[in-house]
Length: 333
Image (tube, rainbow, N blue to C red):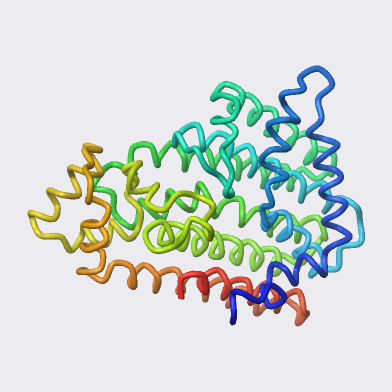
């Protein structure tokens, strides 16, 4: 699959098929991010929401609802809810990570300040709960409330795990399942729930979203060491400079000599980094084949996502969701 040909990208094909619904979602987002009394809220929110993101998570909700033959109006509310939760977490993450770039643009905390980013993120979380309540589905509320709590839990776990060389792959999986996969899974699941789909279909959609989110985050972590700023919208090596222990490094540390482990302890745990350390880190990752092993793990989760779809009815949407799993890992092929 050529990544340069936009017509072949599955998220672009999904966007085309779901264009009318996505327009309704975008209109609802613009309406609900308004604030009569605090103009800073739409200013900060618009900076991120209008920055050209793929809207992948709300698209998953719309695709799941369409795949399950939903004919009502509330998938629009749920898709907007998912995007608000995602945007709120991004605003908070950029403060926690002290990031200065997001989606190729300066972060909100850099343009305004940390207080604005945190408080506007809180506002979007509140808006998301207003939206999900309007669906009248207690089960939907339960799923998205659980996802919101899991996201926060994953972020807090990462605070301690990400700079501790004792962090293993199991803990790493727990972190990314919280911070990324939980919202992917919930976005897919609520689309099936609002459509009244059979439990086997709802569970399949949740499994797909969970595995897709895990694969997506593993690829993002890999691209931090082997991608481009243009492709990621962030600065290459940000995770390294922030002392984040992601899967490529976890694999390299597991195979490290005493001398190599000392290097990782200095640059990750102590954050004592010098010129040339990133280049040396890349050398160690290559020495222990950590990048390729990480890529294989991303492919494994993408295949789990694709296999989960097999119980769902044959449909072009299902094919696009399957292709999306392939595309996630094609970014690192």
